Amino acid sequence: MNILAVTTSYSFELTLICMIAASLYFLLERYKLSDKYKRVSTLAFLTVALAIIEYLGMRDFFDVQNLNSKDVNFPTEYRYLTWVISTPLMLYTFFVLSGFNNIYKKTAIITLLLNFTMIIAGFFSEISFSRNLASFDFTLIMFAIGFSAWLGIVYIYNFVLPSYLSKVKSSEQKYLQSCLGSLAKIVTFSWLIYPIGLVISFYDPSLETSLMRELIYNLGDLFNKIGFVVICYFCAIKLSKLRN
Amino acid sequence: MNLKTFAPIGFLILAIAAIVLPKDIFTAILVFLMILSGVVTIFSNIDIFGDDERDK
Image 1 (cartoon, rainbow over the protein chains, first blue to last red):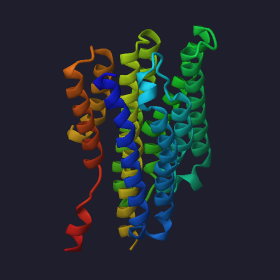
Image 2 (spheres, each protein chain N blue to C red):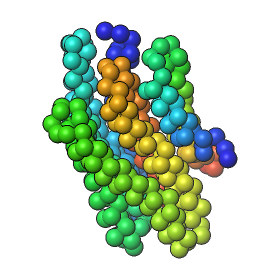
Image 3 (tube, rainbow over the protein chains, first blue to last red):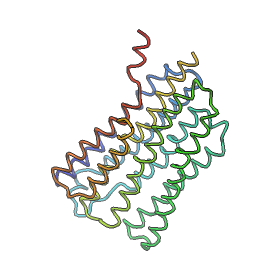
Image 4 (cartoon, chains in turn yellow, orange):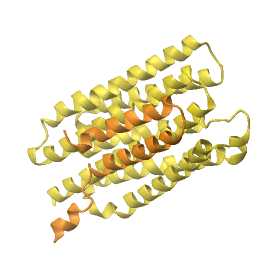
């Protein structure tokens, strides 16, 4: 067992602890939000709290016995279960924060459908490759579908939602623009590590690369999930103060 | 262009470098910088101490 395996193993623990801390924070600091924005706190709490359950499973899965075996098993199913639950909650949090969930319902539904397509296609792409369940062509087709869905989400967060913001009250617009700018960067750049990690594993299936990918996925989950909802939460605090 | 613009891009570049490059002591530095860029991404976008300052 090398140091990379141990570090990867402990990165599950680190992410788990941070998610527990974040979920408690969203609950305890909920009083700072006005009634209109309390749902932001609820969604932020659910995003990280549901991920905690999956991370408990993944942490137990990635134990010393597994790390010492010749064929290390990776918690792919757990990971995709986490993503399929938490990512729609994350993306929907901004719609609730801005009130777009009521005004632009179609855009919200399209975003959630694109997200669902991205995760499911990504799962079939990864599982068909890692378990040799289908041909490599099937893997690539599924990857292309998932990647296209992600591009759709990037387009919505970078071009569609900013255009909607121009119709928002000017006092709220400044805070929402700043929040959306940060969220768009997370969706565009930080989320890109997931498809890149998958593509690299297609062409370099070595154990070291797989362990490194798991470590990066854990750090990615940590900053992308908590970062995304915490930025929405702090924007909600500012908007609550405006209303008061 | 300020720090918060570069942090998510930096996270991505460091992550790619950590996966692609040989795994050695340099990887540990890359992982440390990744954690740092993640923390910068979050903390440059939130206003933790702003509330207290306004209350004063």
